[in-house]
Image (cartoon, rainbow, N blue to C red; front, side, top):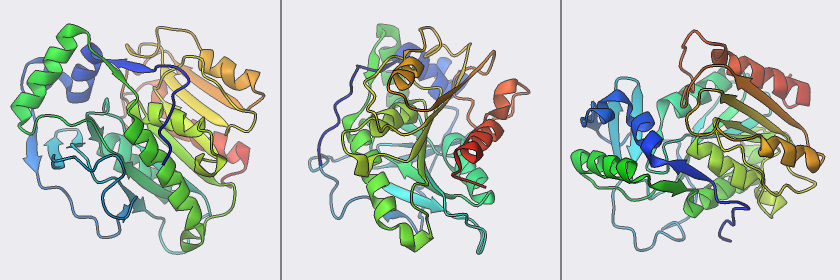
Length: 304
């Protein structure tokens, strides 16, 4: 599979990411979480037969940790899709691939994964959580936290992970190839990503091959810099809070790029919400992003 080529170098700043990914417990030098077994998902779909291309030399093992606000996955080396499907007779023919965030060091599997997928499935959308490959991190939780703190102190910057983009493109291709299996309709396959998952979604949506691009895309608190956009790029939904410390400090070049290409784009820029709000209820206007996303999909004719 062709390696991704980002039109610009998009980064997360580790000084913020280390705290946002692990919360105040990380800031205090403690994990605040407990290791749990990697969940067994009977209907999970591996993206590749055998070892994923590019991970032939990988020796690390997937790990999960339970926190008060949800589960995190680390050291993912076997990428897969986890289907979260509507109740029998409720599917509307639309599918959305859900890409959680976590600075390419972990995946926020609940707040930006299962909770999102369940919300979609309850509305008739066939959801597929993308458990994509991550940068290898120390197996011991204490060592992992220490490494993140050191990265934060040094101002380390984190770029989009090519293997994650490969997995995103493969996921789109796989769902589209097996659309009949889930009763999906043509032109109704979307992808939504959060933070690092939004970075992944952006590279997938702007990829060179139409067969591995979604029909529509959404980015929650992702990069807003200008990119190269093709004349057939998918419609794009964007949501970001003005107090996001990572991505709200620049311009809206991404919106301009989509408009310049003559492609549909919608931006919701909330006064408050921070970074990583996902499915959290904070009593803020950013809580409404799900209903606004649904209204946008309805306007675009991908849901009724």
